[in-house]
Length: 450
Image (cartoon, rainbow, N blue to C red; front, side, top):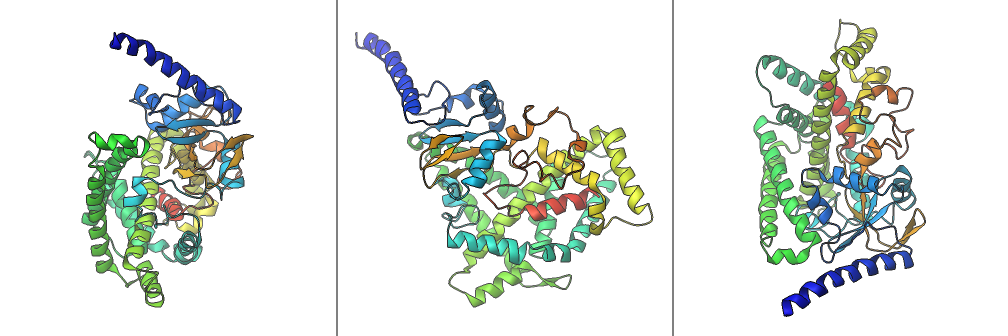
């Protein structure tokens, strides 16, 4: 009898719950919500229904099924989340309401890998975050610094070319090769000469971080699952973080303070600042600051290179031939290309932009959370709502881009690095009005492509 009653009441409860949720959404003038919103898990069932799709592709399907350009209000477990998939909504969130959405959500990733929410990637909007941003953009990532280290990037690009030439006729793991190259470039620019063993060690740490983050996301969105098999995820994250700490301690101790190419390296700059303000520029602060830069630039460069080369090889007689002709017309065959040639090689820039359009380094921009109530597309977005921008959907929506599935660098011709496609093209935007690691990422890609 009790079982029959339960079987009768459960569907009734689900119907009342989902219907009430949608009625409240309309009454409170919140963004539209996909139906149904299930108890406890919210809309997480959508990912379970599409297990073979990456998250950005699954969310793209969800947005297109609505046949509406408006943002969607999802409930990812216990967390309300605004899903943005159009240039207009992205502009309102990342430009008009950028300060409201400047903070990061309280996630296990930020607690353990973000040094308890004090790193550049995870710090709340305020004086500390602004100082980290100033440090990265002015002291370390300035145009002067990038230019001064151009010889380092050129040397690493030549080293990569020689390695690939020596491997002719053999199977090559391009993903591993490009990661090692990107790491060596970034490490050489900010710390001194990098070694192959260090690159492989860092790659392993990044892979372990990614695996731990997947488990952590489950607990972040459905906290009670921490009692059922996911309770050990924080222990795993602490172990990975200890590996990161040991790696950086060894690396800074090995390379710190030296000079490269006549320029004071970035470790030296940070150690000088530490001597001036010991309490602020602690060893931990220096380690976490550099980790954000290294990881961001390495991932951007390696991912973009892998996709760019795959498209060039698939279009050898058209796109690759056109790029070669552009180079031959400018520099001929008597010398190597220099970074000063970049402004005169617009088609190479178009190739990089088109690669980033089809395969953004961050298909889903990093999660943020609203610090106050705001309005997006006329809808009310309550305080504490997470923001999830699907850059991949914005880049690959046929309503925004003609033939988005085609690799067509010509679509960027005549533009200025793609910036005229405001909020239709979001290759580097991990945080409103920032792009740490992306200056080096972009330059590193160009050097290697040469």
